[in-house]
View 1 (cartoon, rainbow, N blue to C red):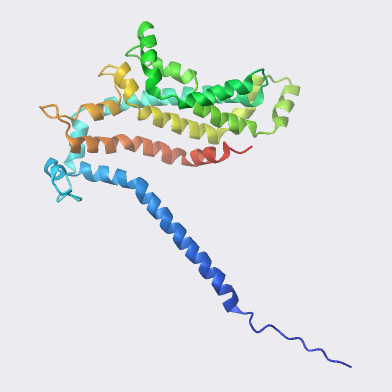
View 2 (cartoon, helix red, strand yellow; view 1 turned 60 degrees about the vertical axis):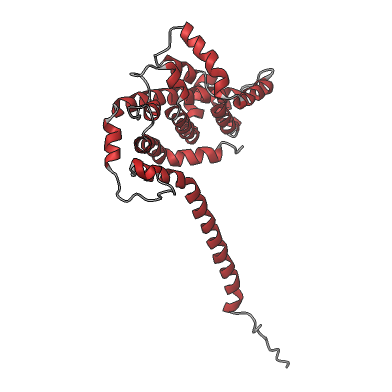
Length: 295
């Protein structure tokens, strides 16, 4: 009888798995370092804005640059709040931004649904023209738009933002079209067999399924309108103007020179509502941007 001995590889052991673990940890360290650097790059301007709002005019004019204030001037924020009707301008901005964002999100969803699920001659050509219109700068269409609204007697009212909202916007139409194109065809076919028209299919089936893109579209449209300076400056009077216009044009001294530290303090408070909107809707925003390109 022959006895066969089994030999084991003496090289196998804990040391064989330690090298991959070290590489994984090194890769993670490099990745986290890059992410921290990118985060600092994007948050740096906002941090500098906060520091500017905490300085005195002499520190802002100092040469070389005075990086940190000797004493934090917290009263700059109180002064920026009290020197203008801050809440009144914020209310105007909130009304315009919410009105426009709600209308343009729904109208863009409706147009995107049509491009994604309905068949018609020339649909691809029209969609190409729509996407191409995103290349047009706002300044090109602003003057003709102002003349139209002036002829219609809509200057110094909120009607321009209502009409803009009902007209949809190409970028959001593109997002909704990409999202709706990825939904199964069986959803609408089953609804149509049960007697539901395309309007019912949109409102009852497709729109409830698109909450990620709805959240992303609302945040994008709200940010656009809240941060818009040119259109409110051109179309609204001082009493109806927005917070963006007030912050950039009201904080001046007797000689008409901007008071930079007050502008910075007012700008910090002006940015806070946008941050709150994003924090509330960030999950839907990220999901919408991630799924709108999937088919």
